[in-house]
Image (cartoon, rainbow, N blue to C red; front, top):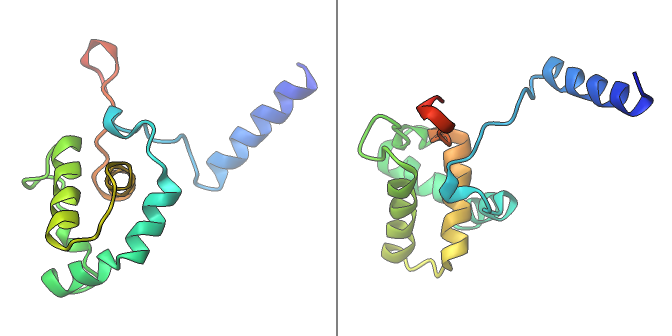
Length: 118
């Protein structure tokens, strides 16, 4: 085995041991989304605080993957709805970034693999 391959395998093993595991596939809609920007915008616009006022607790109860938000497109649409209703002034790429973070952290709309397998 080459040194580079050994280092790569060791890094992958360490990631699994540390709980990182393999990265989840993003829904195609979010493939090019800027996740760091999405995280920043969620904090800047205090989304969690607004959701907590609406549903109580820490606001996480608003994320119900089995509810009416059942696709990546609907998730993005809901973020756009909040953007419009609250006059947040986010650009389309900002909305996509926020939706991508919500998908990653709460919804997990995965890209379907060829043949319909997940």
